[in-house]
Length: 134
Image 1 (cartoon, one colour):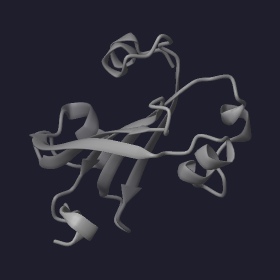
Image 2 (tube, one colour):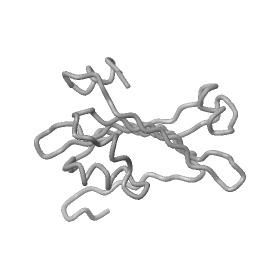
Image 3 (cartoon, helix red, strand yellow):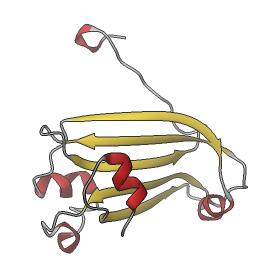
Image 4 (cartoon, one colour):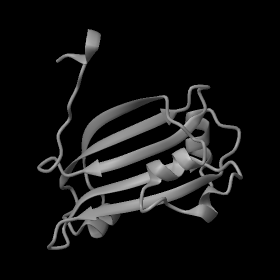
């Protein structure tokens, strides 16, 4: 896919991305998360290889795209009509929105992910300080 706005936001020269959108559902079909992963297209054959046993993380590692750092922003917002339809929810239902950017050791973007998460099913765990103690 092409996304010039995302490329500009991430400081990328190319606006071509591999797109993977996933919904996680309960047994009754109700969605609890909607995830939009965008991976810069580099011509390394990742789309042809596909997921590694259903895992995007393992596929990225196998392609040599190793994440060294990440940054995310959490907010709360209502679902729009299209998101609500996909998740089998009502428009306006409050969901956590987590936007994350993962980078390799050289600073290149390995993945950008925007997730909508049911706050009744997900929580935020923050760790800080020396040794990662709470």
